[in-house]
Length: 492
Image 1: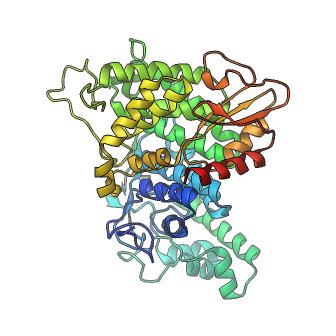
Image 2: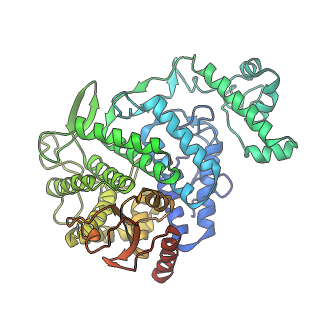
Image 3: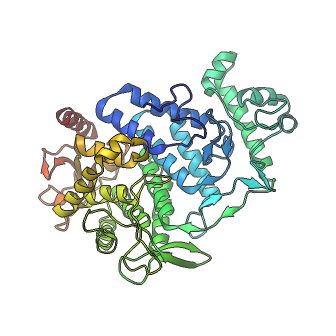
């Protein structure tokens, strides 16, 4: 928290990046400890980004970073991975606090992704450029006269809310941004909030339609396995937080595309990128680690055990072809790639989580699901080996720090059994439980130790377990939450 900007949100000075790993850590830390300062800084950071120019107020989606400390002037490039990470973070914030702003931003951001980055084959493209017609941001910025002409008598209120100035608020043009909620603005102006909401909505729709006639930024239409897997996780997280069925449907279609188009010849082998019907380049550790995690999240939101069998195959492949035996860490490239002179390891969590921090999470989770002690122990070993570095430089190891936090407070195992359990599963998914193992099934399956010995009937039952030892089952999610609260107090 030493680098936290307590007035403008975020961390450090300009340029400001979203730093979603740090925000997620604070959300998880709050969930474990109730530390209000951590929660407030996380929410302040999210609020200021959503209100700022880094967020596209008309079309949804986040730019890569802000060039200033106020979140006003972005580098206008929109990256798939940034929007995935922010969707994941906002979905978790939705689960913690009932704040319409976060739910609306998740929905608006995914609207952008589906409109601008989703291919006809259900893959996600990589990015939209910052420039159009050779000028950075030209597609997104506005002259006040243009807005006045488009909105007429309603322009004054719209311009005041979105901070539009005659001389421009950035390099003689205007970046739409806001400094307060619609409710607070309406109260300050003593006007009807519903009327204001309607005026602003119509204004955004009018400007968005006009913007659509401009020369669009170029599209980077590469489809990358790792970034697609990260967005797949985002859709699973968004479904869990909102219950919107479309998000699960898109996640399933995207996974079907990934498993079919990226698969290499050998079992467990995948390609890194896809474009114009051609897949190429051996997949990297990051690709595999994110694909594994996406499959894990899909099994959580669907209850489908077939996803876990694919997970097991992939984990075995990564262990066989990426391992550094001396340390337990994993190389960035596989042992069959011939064009690599020196195989490197990546431990830092940079633009996306490092493959090693992701694999720590994957190994622990799958080690429980399949009761493979060696995998759980390896996760703890590589986490323990980097612990001191993470404590010293948490901003550079945010995903690691979040994994270690969960391990230190204890990782619950939740099992849902019985037929017709979909409504109960949705309720469980809406709860924010920082790191847990979740498995549901209508019938016993001897392949999965967590399902063994449970009661399976027409009536759904919820088991809360730790190290495969389970408490008596309950039938209501409220009871599960009470049990989780007691477990949290015990572990702390």
